[in-house]
Image 1 (cartoon, protein in one colour):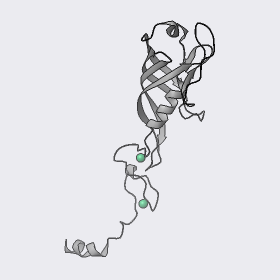
Image 2 (spheres, rainbow, N blue to C red):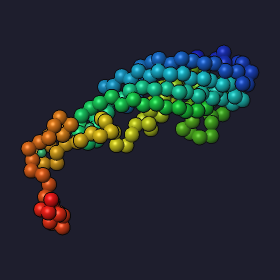
Image 3 (spheres, rainbow, N blue to C red):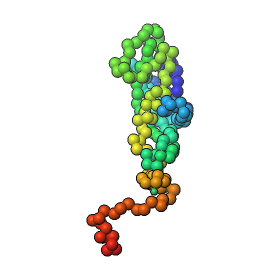
Image 4 (cartoon, rainbow, N blue to C red):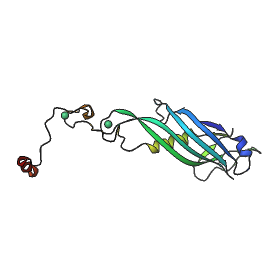
Length: 170
Ligand SMILES: [Zn+2]
Ligand SMILES: [Zn+2]
């Protein structure tokens, strides 16, 4: 997701660009996934940087925390990040690196690469307990059958003796 921003860096503070995004990246970085990213980004020239605002969505293959089946989880992200140029675009002189070492940078060729920021934000958007559907029935703890596909033949759980009498009463 490389953008050449040399022109934008030469423009006055407040100049903007809009980009429509439709690209494939590997969000997990494991080399086995290809994730199509769609949405829009806007870039604004600030005094020291380029402020990038993005609104993006994708689908990521996850495995359900209850039934272990894999499924496609839609994910949406929205972020603002500053990207700091390594060189002054006119003089070519090196600029001081940003104070935070984790800040995003624009390389010596004035290429702003969105990939790492987009990956990080999508990874943050992954739910801690992914579910294939809200009411996923999960696996039977005894026989391991996927209960979304129907009941298993295991006997029902033992009823708490305090409630057993009530059950008899019925
Ligand atoms: Zn499930
Ligand atoms: Zn069972």
